[in-house]
Image (cartoon, one colour):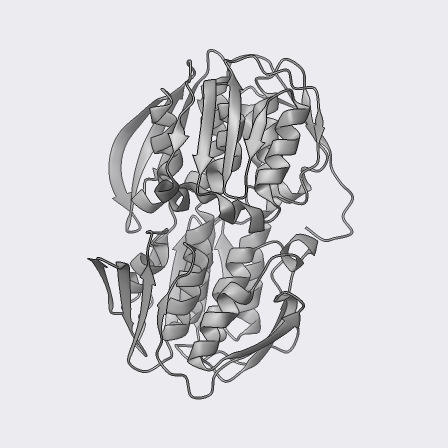
Length: 444
């Protein structure tokens, strides 16, 4: 969303039970990766089900700037004619990644081992987010980067002319950093190795194999070791993007807390590295049934049938955090309606997302009458057993997930809940408002 766009307040009110089918958009993580890997492949990659939110559209435009031909051929259907590994040309202008931390970090990795220079920027939210966690491992390949104080955008990256392979142990669980290193390793000789102590979402490894790269994964005492053989001849392929489990979280969670609701969410990715929220919800007593489990586009998927019911507070272990890092805000909203406290551990990473999500959720929940305790790495929501006062206007800090989480809360609270700006929702979930209204939700 442009920095100068006028805020768009939106209010959610309790009403009738939610019912019907919620067809959520394609997976954002996979959409970014499909465009980038398609651009690094010689030949045409056809993508269906692409998320057409602004974050992904910004990545598509970036791939054009690096020389790929990227064309929309229909609703969710895109064609990418790539330039091959190491074939990126130097962009003629600044690369604007909007609100997307995933987009900018993965693109930096993809260009870091090609001898071109690119300058990256983004919206006010993205310019606050740290990039050093990516530029530090990319420097090991030979890339150089200069940015604002604290390693923040705008930032100029100079790709390595003679890259070397890297062995890198992730200091914190981060699929973005892992993926940036693996993408950089595509144009480095020899083997690039990434070691993660805790498994993070594995879409990059899966998709690299689909495009013909040699990638192995081994579990050893030090963690999970991913090895990529550099300079492969990537081959174009068809990518069918499954529906996004992070987007599905919002209608799923709304259906759980609005009494009497019964909602079907079809074809949602069940990737085990993205399944933490759904595991947690079922531990809370949620009525979620997995129907017709199958595989689409190399990813396990299922249809979710969700019915409202009583929920109880639980504790999420720190080792689960990486598999649900984007879903903690909406879990906090659900936890407000549970019986007893819900303790979320290992959530430090939330403090450096589009906003400080721990602080934003805590402030908003307290304003809605819900007690919250927080530390640097934990958040505890004291559930009120289905009786949440609401009645607040919540600041979302340009963060789409904070906005959607409080709108979900407002669908079941005693008094309406307003978010000060629903505009950022379009970066990841275009059509969110219409989908919720289509289920019977009161958004205005």
